[in-house]
Image (tube, rainbow, N blue to C red):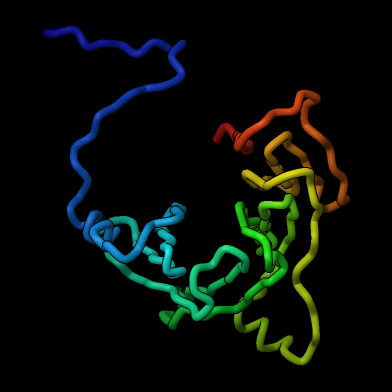
Length: 210
């Protein structure tokens, strides 16, 4: 019986070579388009989301890679506004655009992060401003239509471009070109992480160990 190589515990990375990508995935990605350029990507447990230079968003369902949804808007290529959609998949309805934020108008949005517990999205831009958008479902929005309320809150403005945002259990982690900051969003307190400044696009994220 041939011996199998054993990966030692001291190694932190594994290099693996996989088979070619599923042809149905390549078709769904539409990488053969000469007019559109893919500008962003995000993955959840159910969806693969791809942003394009035309401003649209392709949502591809994982498992079979069926091209299910395409979200478009009339603002063109989006880099200075934040749009929030409700997909309505449980009710088998059409996606609804429930909120548009112009809080960062005139600036370039560089980072986004979800707080799924309180339905908030944190937005960072190229000058270091971070805002939070408190969301409601479309049903709640219609019920509160008589009230004039602004769900956008400015969290803080740091020294330089926001490289990455991450959120975990009431803590917002913000990474700029020079350092990282930790924010207690409930008590509105801030801490700078470390003393040595850096120079470059280095992010930071929480490691949960799960």
